[in-house]
Structures are given as C-alpha cells and as structure tokens.
Image 1 (cartoon, helix red, strand yellow):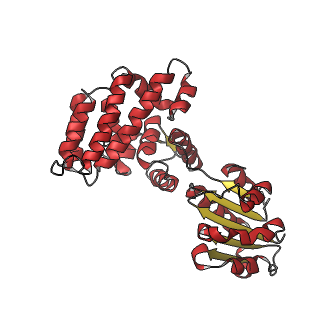
Image 2 (spheres, one colour):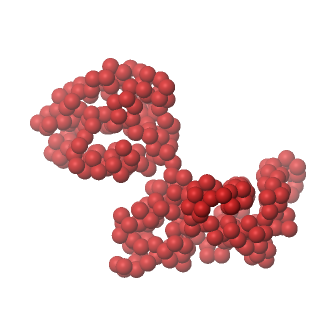
Image 3 (cartoon, one colour):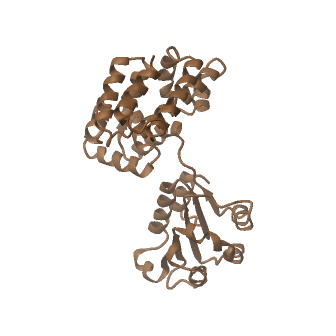
Length: 334
C-alpha cells in the first residue's frame, strides 16, 4: 500500500497488527503514525491502552512486554515506537513476535532516515507479511504535483508559477510545504488563486533575488540580470550561501545535458521524467538548450567543480566569496 491507501485503510478502521514505517520520507511516517494515534482508540480508552516508546530510551523487552498485554475495557491496545531506528541492532529480538503478533495489539514502528534491509531475516519476514512500508523522499519532478495535491486537500488554489516557486525553494521538506500552504490559506478568500507575487511576499522569497530568478536569467542568457542577482547574492552571502548556488546550478546544467541527449527521442512527459523535472520546466530547458551546447555544458560543469573547490580555499585563500560568484557566473555565460 502507498501513503494514500494506508491513510484510507486507517479511516476505514482496517487496522494491521504491525506497521513498520521506514525510509527517508519522515513526513509520511509522521502523518501515518499521527493518523493511527488519532483513529484507533477513543479518548477514554487511551489512558490504559496507548503506550508510546522512544527507541533511544527503551529496550526491546519493554516493548515486547507491553505488546503482549491485553487491552483494558477496549477491543485493542496501541503501541507506538518512535525513533525506532535506534533499535536497529536489536530488531532480530522481535522475530518471534513478528511471526505471531498478538491480535489485540496494534504495534507501530517509526523507523526514520533509512530503510530496513530486506535481505535480512527481519526485513524478509515483515515484507512477506505485508507489515513493512517504505517511504522514499519525493523526487524533485514529483514535487509540483504533490504541492498541488496538498493545496487541494487544504482547499487552496495555486497557479503554476506559485507551485514551481514553492517546489524550487522548499525542496522535499513536505512538512515545511504543508505549513506554508496552510499559512497562505489564511491570507486568501475562498476561491482566490495564490499567484507567485503572494508566495514571494508571504513566504519570504525575494522577488528579484533568488535561485529561481537566477536560473531563469541564465537559461535565457540574460547576462545583465544574472550579474545583478550574483552581485546581490555576493553582498548577502549569509542568506545566499555560495555552496547552495553552486549545487543548484550543477543540478540545472546536469539536467540540461540529459535534455540534449533525449530531446529528439522522447515525448514531453517521458522527457521530463527522464531528466527528473516536472513538465512545466521543459519550456525553460528548451530555451536554455539554444544557448548551451553539450560541449559548453561540459565546460560549465567543470567550471562549477573548480569554483566549488576555490570557495573552500583549495586554489586561493584570499579571494572573497562574492568575487568567486561573479567570476563563476561570467564564465558559465560566456
């Protein structure tokens, strides 16, 4: 089951005896565990039948002892193990319980930051029993669709540019995205569409000085605008760290290189998936491909590696960050 299917099954009260939630997508893990905590027991039943453990501060024996208890004046009891990744070395001690879980106990593991190894006995056992749920980070090209879905859930309408800006600057921090969508919802009347100006004003992005505008200027070969933004970045390096700018541009040029290789072989949707962007961005990549050939892109990627090392003092310990940035932008656009 995927995230939506799990939530739906919980709402329908089709509970499993074990939920082993694992992976880097901590947002999904938190949402499912919160949904279970809100849904399984009535408030009057929670005092005697709901137990929350923290992996760093508990033992396997304590969890097993609690899981084997019978509920008190309720049909089931709920055990939630947060930060379960701290028990990773001792998970084999749960093997017998996982083979035969107590039917009146719902046992939830929140195993964050990594996945259980399915090649090992515990991983195989949980996977075979359909108790193991993997949650990967939402990929960059999937973010706009996820943002639209989150906005719809919150009865908020976003235009395409607002969606792109949110995905560009909040990345795959889904909790932060949801928090900002809820913030925007408070600022609009019913039926009003949130545009890019509202996002820039209320979420804290500068209208003229951000990575989104810099990439746009570079893609359009607007040397004057790119230089102006680079100057601003250099004077405000605390808010615009050079390492983030280099990483962002490296990702953009890497995807643009892929675009060159696949543009004549795939349709737009397939092409977008192949290079790892939302179809909305293809217009920008088509434009940029006119100015940056494959050989120029290879040169630019080399430039970025050079200036990354330079920013860390490898070639020069006296050149300032703003000077490095201005020189780097000039080089990649000429």
